[in-house]
Each structure stands twice: as structure tokens, then as C-alpha cells.
Amino acid sequence: MHPLLEQLRQSLESTIDGMTAEEFNWHPLNKWCAAQILEHLYLSYTGTTKGFQKMLEAGKPPTMRGALRKRFRAWFVFTFDYLPSGREAPAPTRPKGLPPEEVRNGYSQKIAALDAIILQAEQRFGSGAPLLDHPFLGPLTGAQWRKFHLLHGLHHRKQIVRLRKSKHA
Image 1 (tube, rainbow, N blue to C red):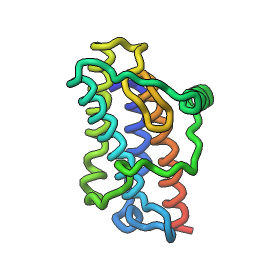
Image 2: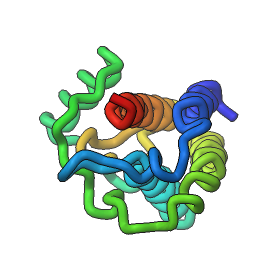
Image 3: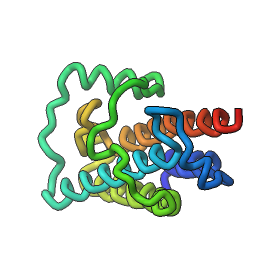
Image 4: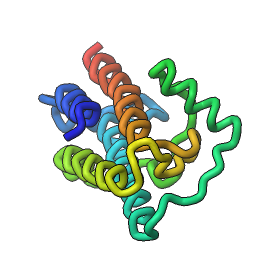
């Protein structure tokens, strides 16, 4: 597995390790619980993998035009390794009520599938080529997709850590 995605996998694993079902499902009013946060990440890995699958089946990366605003956002995220908070998750990545144990036991395989398909796309179209369009950041290379998922996962990891502390406060 690529080191960035392995770092993501290990970071999430260490964060949820030892969480009870009660801790996993506890949340303040109008906030996601750890199970929902992990489901959101699970769905984002699934969605990105499906996007890469469609692109590979089509035989070429889609023609993408990154609006200036998206390019600026991408420059900011990848220059400062910072994912701003406050953006609403795209509908396909919002928790849908998957069984928490399915998500807890399956997110690691979703990261592995994501890793494999990004590598496959890079081998076919080149590692420096924009491969797939991100809804907020525009066209990204394989390296940028890996970095995005790491930053996104670390962003949500902090939320899970805060939930664990709040539950015990």
C-alpha cells in the first residue's frame, strides 16, 4: 500500500481501537457520532474508487476544466496540507445508516481498493496526469487523490478523538 494511504489506515485504526459500541455511537446533538464519521470516510473511499473504475472503463480520464476557484482551493489544500472545515459533505458521502460493524470492519479494505485503483490509473495514464475530478478541488492526480484522502481522514480523525474525550468528560 502507498505510504500515505497506509498512514491513513493506521491513523484511523489507532483512533477507533478499543472503542466500545456505546462510544462509537455517542454524539452531541446535531453532530455525527464516530460510526457516522467513519461511514462518511468509507463512502468517500467507495465513491472515489467507483469514479476511477468508470474512468478506466471509459479508457481515458474525463476532459476536466478546473475552474479558477477549484484550482485555488487545490493549491491551498496541497500547499499547506490543510483541509478547511465547515464544508457540507457531498450527498453520496453522507452517512446512510450502514451497520457500524460493517463500516468498522470494512474501511480498511476500502482504502486498499482505493490504493489499487489509483495505481492502476497511474500506470495506464501517467503519474502526473490529472485523473479524476474532485467536486471541490477540480482535477487531481493520483498523488493528489492520496494526499486528499489522508488529509480528509486526519481531519475527521480529530473529530473522533474529540468525541471520545467529550464522552468521558
